[in-house]
Length: 214
Length: 214
DNA sequence: ACTCTTTCTTGATCTAAGTCAATTTTTTGT
DNA sequence: ACAAAAAATTGACTTAGATCAAGAAAGAGT
Image 1 (cartoon, rainbow over the protein chains, first blue to last red):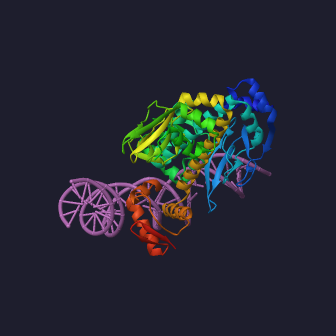
Image 2: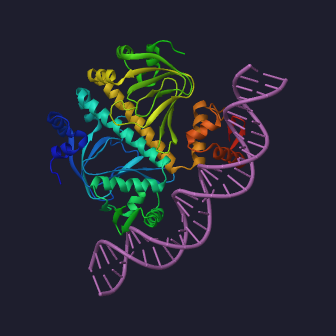
Image 3: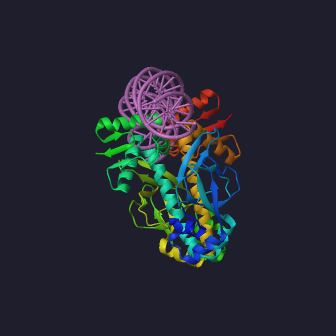
């Protein structure tokens, strides 16, 4: 658990390569260490908060609601990740909101302060453009994955990604299956059936949360 | 049909608000008026073209292929629109490609030239950040619409959007139904059935391409 | 150890949308 | 105006995944 704004900002991958001078400039305009209990809202639809949010500890869900009140998880921010969206640059109304999934603490930088800093630092602007470009690519990839891959392909891809990160074909799921279902955009029932299929196929061995990829 | 690079760039909404000085700087580094026949490729997956593309005339599809060779239409660029993606800022491999849908002509600005200009012009950087922010929001909206709305809701929304733009409840489809189906991410057969449903519901009157929203 | 709550599983059923195939309508080229 | 090509419609069938409902298993609090 970090305890200074400097540490919080420096730890964020999107800022970490920046020269310390710029980081200190960011620290100066940041609002330090806000605490949020699990389930509480960091910002809500139509809020004019307009700030850049850096997660120090905990997890934060960024979601969207449609007219019928149905929620869609856009992404979950983990420690040191930054919510670059939230209309930091555009004035467009946003219909999404951020909610603490676990007890969390965040740093914030207000939109106007950040924009002023950008004006004076072309390097920072260029850096942010790169970040946005990556986010864009990522979002596109996700959209492609959702419309071109079936649920079981998505699940398998997810499992292989974990195995790759852990560099081990045996691992435990870090999240509940319910949460996994949400992030794969399927129901828990469907996920349960997909797992069953993978087991009978002999693609995986599954014992509770423990998974062995064959 | 425009005939100078200046006109081409000035006509693009994302650049039009910029001071003429900057536009001229953009013109200087732009590659003028390339012609593409319908069906030909502007860039392909893994190409290292890395240029910003401004459509002068015609229509250009930006698509993606998955492993099975299935195509997904990301968006269609019309006259004066700019392809801000195509790894302009990131080095990440992109799996997508651009193909002329109709005979088209485009202006291009090479990545390195553009980045150099950005370095010297914080205003331009900030401007581009705004553009990216909007694109990001747009993409998110689309993803939400695709996973939260059913096909008939998407169709109706599309029809209402046209009516709103034309400020008239009676209008003609500017594209073929086949193309509409692609952009709604459904098959032509399904679209045909949806239209039929809307007609029997009494939601619309349809005669060939002419539509009256009731 | 024993509730109470939440997660997970399983079965039965439903539905939106895709696929395949055949036909009709519209558009295009000459 | 006519032939050929492309677009649109229709029907029969399949399928992935959702929904509803009911149990089983696991976890948490006392």
